Image (cartoon, rainbow, N blue to C red; front, side, top):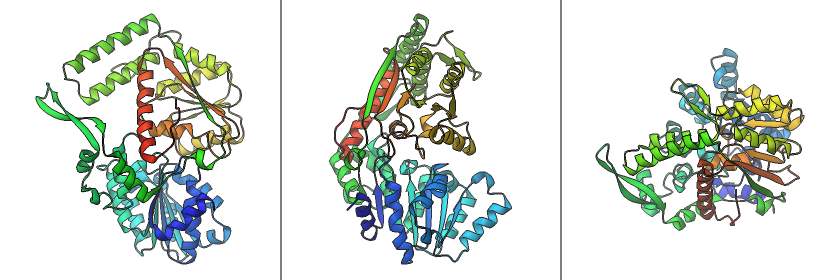
Length: 476
């Protein structure tokens, strides 16, 4: 019995279930297969698929047609939400036709942001009004923040759905606290047997705190220093979720990791150490607020990337020749075939694209400034036709809904602290369809924020691995 078949059998016994499978292991197929039987028996009359922007379109255009048989597709009415076009009368008529349809099943594909809009909620209520509704939350980490409007609305929808599936390979994206709201979507009373009724109680039960003092505001505060009771958290996750890793179920080639280092120029090093010293003094005096600390760390990292922002929003480049760009170009000279380059900042991406263009080589760009049509074209030119050798993007924009198995090398020009973005972006190339080992190269400035960031990512990864029961492995 395949793992997909085994999961399919649980739908009757488990109306609410979490598929915490690593990216590329077949979560979508395992979710869709049992719907065929439920639709055929009229136990489901409507399906709402919520996914990050752009990924919901993949469900509509690729996943549903690929995984469901033709005879069931003929018995379904489907509509893909496009926020920018919903004022269009034609789109409104098409939506109304789907919602009023008499076919065996109606399916609405929507991005999470649409849940915040009156028009989006109105459509969802119309879809769910007759009951027998399945709710699929793809990349459910989008509802990990309890106080967010989207999270509150999605949890309310989950209470009225007959079947719920949350899909994510990174439930614990940055801390164990990420699990609270996602599991509540499966069962609003999931934590009650531990005596936990609120998110505040959840954090108190699983967190270890020390008392700090903010001298500027003359007040004490609780600072998180560690986690506890993780065996209890693992127990709850095991009750509601299944977990598969690629090592367990796929015969994929290995991931290989290496770092390449460079020295900051003397001028950049002096500026870096000066800002670092100011930051240490502020922290020592206990007057640094969290936003200020984040800004300081951003500035330190930007110095290692060769620039600093001005108060007017422009960028001052610190060197005529950026040593990080120089290292990137040396690294590209050593690569063969298609390459993905991930970078944190827009300025990074601008500089990378300019350097590749100066080399006379082909590339596509994939970040927040590229619209849906541009992103589809970027995927086509890189993955399907191979006309673009380099795929340059931001992990936040590219971590979902992409298959980029043409690449055998992924370069992290710069990282951030988001474990979810790192793991998801890694797996754009390492998934079903990849037949070669994938090499991951991190570019790092010596004695800088680069090492601090990767250390933090590894620590988060170790905690998530422990909670999910994954085998130990070397990473980054």
